[in-house]
Amino acid sequence: MKVRITARHFDLTEDLKQFAQQRVESLTRYYDNFIDLHLKLDVEKYRHTADLNATVHGNVLSCSAGSNDMYATVDEVVNKMESQVKKYKSRLQDKDQRTIARTKTPRTPVVEDSGDEFEDDLD
Image 1 (spheres, rainbow, N blue to C red):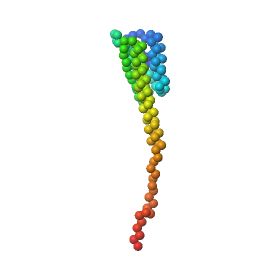
Image 2: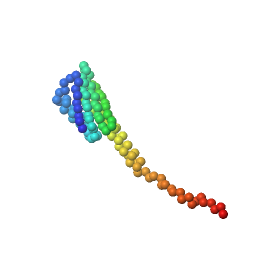
Image 3: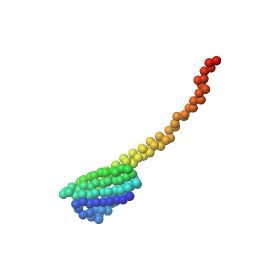
Image 4: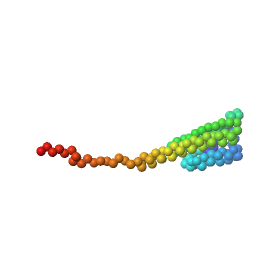
């Protein structure tokens, strides 16, 4: 898993970087198979925004948040991603259960026709 943090329009402090890194890595508690996690932090005047993209097998989960404090923004975006990851994981588990149920259902037996039942005696 690769975690990338990008800062736009401001200098990323070491404290903020460590905080964001820890919060983003906490997502592995819910799902371990992330391919890439990319957190983009942006400041425009007084508005602090964060976008988080999580690449998983075949899909990209994304969310964004904004507030007046960058730490609160990072918390909010990670909380949103937690709910998306939980939902994604439950969808995967439901799909697995359907596949298992489909393969375990008994098939209808094939009845072979011997042809003896419909013989007519025309003697």
